[in-house]
Length: 327
Image 1 (tube, one colour):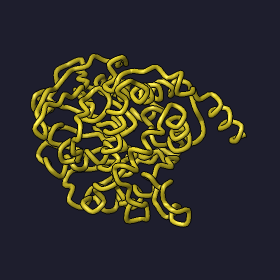
Image 2: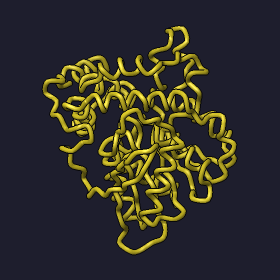
Image 3: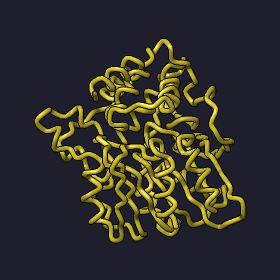
């Protein structure tokens, strides 16, 4: 039965020629909530960050910041943002530089330090003080780096299937230089995005509502300026592979909650490792099991039936768990 489900899902993957070009900065993709803009200078040039800012029914000083992953955008958080705002919190969800609707400067040196500093500046401009920081996937690494750099700004850290809890290069994944990563990005299209997410994120079970997120990502690559996206994504992959936070977890001084979809098979670039080594590269849930012991104060909230993106796969269950962790 599983084979039939997988076969049917792959057969339904649209070809790249059918992908609607959306622009390198998603100019032709409408978010579910109004988009605000933050303009800044970084590495000697201008950058622009898109972000969502959702207010609760009554004024509050409590702010929750939602940080997206590599294959996600602020809009992926829209349903979560609405629910958390109804729970009495202001919610801010930025698109990081290099992603989605935000700037993708040529030859930009991507680092979690740079992204954390820009996020802090955005929060300053938005008038947000101390925040609860929620980071998903790559956003989990960013959330940890932010908490290490600016501990006075973080009240609580919530990590949702985060990367970076293990050093995949140390576990046997071969280092990939920029040309290798660019060559991989050149092959990315709707079919490859869907196939990757089907296997690693959604454990072989695809739903039509996931297609929006495939179209969002593939539409950037399919645009006339798609090479801007490919170069940014290659540089971001280099950032992820070379800047894990696994060795610094003991330095986090705020309470941490790890919300982990247990069926997640994500292990960053493990498919490039020799087959004999591949099984030794820990998946996100495996890394989380060990990492929770290294944070000074941490709680693991397993979600046994879900994969890499619990906020997409089961919004109601995820939002309930998230609100409990925030409170």
